Length: 333
Image (cartoon, rainbow, N blue to C red; front, side, top):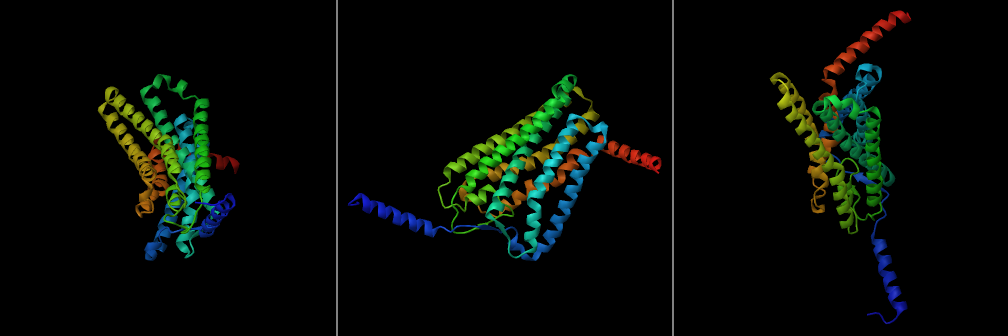
């Protein structure tokens, strides 16, 4: 019990100052990454560098081919070109810093640098989740409503859908990053991952994060689970339409394509759902790094080969572009 308002005020001030002194003002974070496998770090550097370069080249190839080939100026390849641009930004946000840290003993990132990386990751990741759903919706209309396809997927509609991906991503990035970096961080500054992500940073906060955890769960449902369900429903309708209306030969080809798409989609969405739907008590586990690798490096690496590079349209467009270049060269000479 306090014997006067002044004494109460002094006691409260004392405990407030003590609490503030016990909190460490963090100016940088340590990205633990793959420090526990020191002997493999140079090997991992080479592997991830090769994956990074191949991924960038594959995605840039898709964008340039879309720009150069009029035959690819369709809604499907419009989405794929935008998807590739998203993937380039996504990979460039995470892998370069990871590669640097694999070669250095001091694996740090500044407080502001961590906030920027998280914002970009959340923006691009959210946009990608929605882009995958819109790509599935495009294929659904092309196969299930072929007569109305050109009217449904008008260029203006496609542009609006792509814009909505970026808008949703930006909103999620601003909201989540503000919530996380408004928290006080004290004690350990070690992030048990190779980039700045929501779950490991929440585990470092020295404040009750229940409200932020609930908010993150709601955002995960809206941004990840809903697009995943829409994607699965679209492919289920595509498969059903193919079974009813197409020959056995076309069924096998379509099933092969749909299966490969669904495998990639399940890898990306599934690992993200597991990562962001877990309770806080499970944060900091080494399994997080493997889950993170799936949707930050592995999925972006195999996406261009599954969605674009093995398509006959892309192969034919590449041949036409090469032929056109050969024809133009003698004329220029």
